[in-house]
Image 1: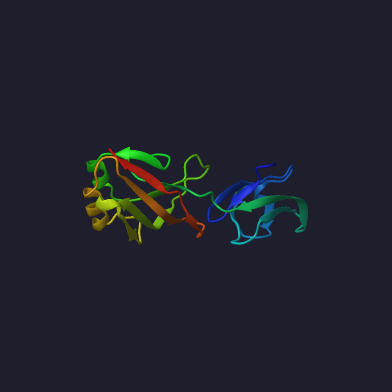
Image 2: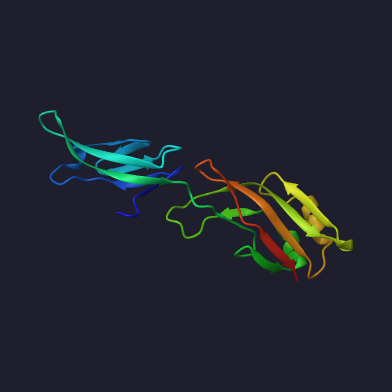
Length: 188
């Protein structure tokens, strides 16, 4: 009962039954969001702003009347934030050779160990690196792609220098923009 949760932007599967009532006779309703399905198997899409939603279940009786069978409240939550990743770097920090660094093509957003398979799209990020002379250079991408200018910047780095991918923005199926973790890469 403590895990009664619907996630925004997702098809949340729900099984509904009532003692002594055929599944085909159930008529569930939802207070906020949409509910579709039949015969005990339903999909809930919660509303965009509510923090809770209630499913009420009615039985359609043979005489044409409806009988209230019960209700259940659910919390409505945003999706948890995904984690920004690039190939070869886990948990936001790692080491790559110069060759590996220049072969990077994209920054991804991954949501690990979540109950649903959810896809997020990275919509932009910044790359920051300290170049010769101690000057910091920053470049922006307005997509998930590492630009050719960024790769050129990487080619000029030496072992021991670092690259930070920061201000990573992503959006998921719930339409809520997310700010993701930075990624620190040390050139080896």
